[in-house]
Image (cartoon, rainbow, N blue to C red; front, side, top):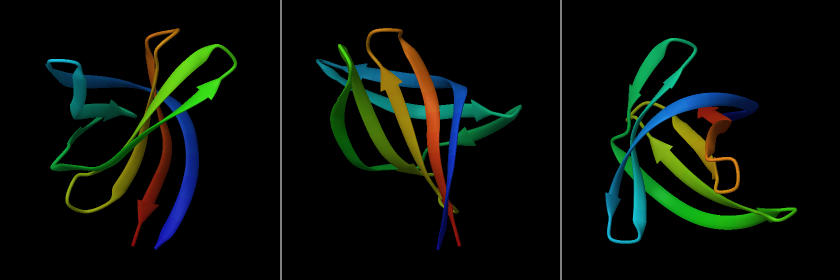
Length: 82
């Protein structure tokens, strides 16, 4: 499996359940990706900003999405393809 760093801004549709956020789909380079599963989540800090990371799959490839709680922006950090 090859992992490629991307670090590009994306649009994300997310569901909110109590205090949890779950990405449902994302739009990257004018292509729509439906998220079939969230495999893992974790948090990190970038200066004073809290980053929320999501390892997700569309059934074909794996993606690392990152939400910056200070700027309210989503990025596609990495893509893993077979």
